[in-house]
Length: 217
Image (cartoon, rainbow, N blue to C red; front, side, top):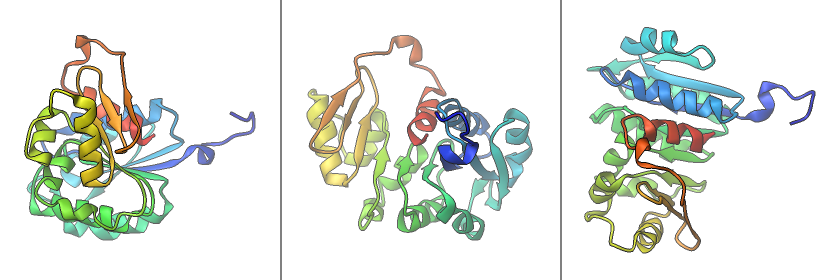
């Protein structure tokens, strides 16, 4: 990095994560993004958990958004769409919850974001019943399912050849597919990478949220 660099040189990220009862996911995702070098991380959360997230996080720009039943809802969209054009990448889904409101927020992001979008966790679960939301996406989209989320998304568990499974799913969904698990596979449908690192100690709640933050960063 240049000696005279400033925070604006290293990306502005928008994270839409968390819900009542799932405050850790949002905080871990934001921490993952910040520790990976993002210059500015904006974290939008349901207003009822704003105080918790603001207390957990010192570096992220945490802001409250309208909610229904502890989850983001369509009333949050004006603030989100105001920020979206200024962002270099978006992460949506970590601990977000499943509701009509969160589906509307996901739909708006995939339709409007002119930057890369990472869809994780509940974002994938929402997408599994609304795959058409990815149609027309002009910028890259990264999906990060574990086996259970993959099965909901694709209607079947990954095949024994996980490289082929990731590639086929990437082609079908028109995205970059990161199939988490032992020796995670990452494919855009043509090129596929296998991560030979990691260990069983990573198999715990929160690892995926950190990973999502790292990816969006």
